[in-house]
Length: 128
Image (cartoon, rainbow, N blue to C red; front, top):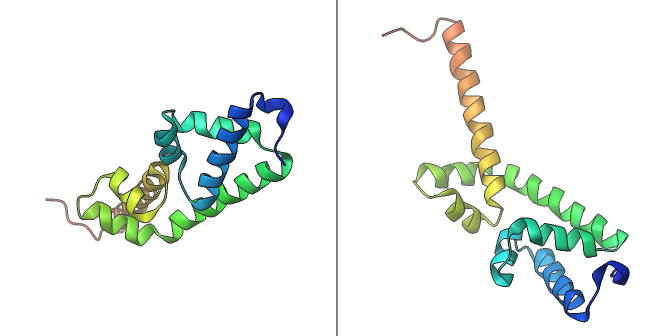
């Protein structure tokens, strides 16, 4: 399970186990980082460096699942953003990372631009 060669002290082992449990429960790197007073990037590093091959595979599975979840929740994410909520508020409400919210918003913006460009090219939009 836990790769003790990389882990070091008992405190690191316990910290890793706690972080791994929180991540498996659905907490984001950012939420875990706030609990431990570290950055979300450091949380990611601790989880990946301390994981056994099986745990690393599980972490990657969870990450892919969360990314797909954000795509499935795109309508709700966009609605909350349109209501004036911040990306951070939306992320916490929906249960995804701020990065996932940004990705959904950017994708929607690009699609809107493509649609507008297509209408312009087709002459459906008047000038002025």
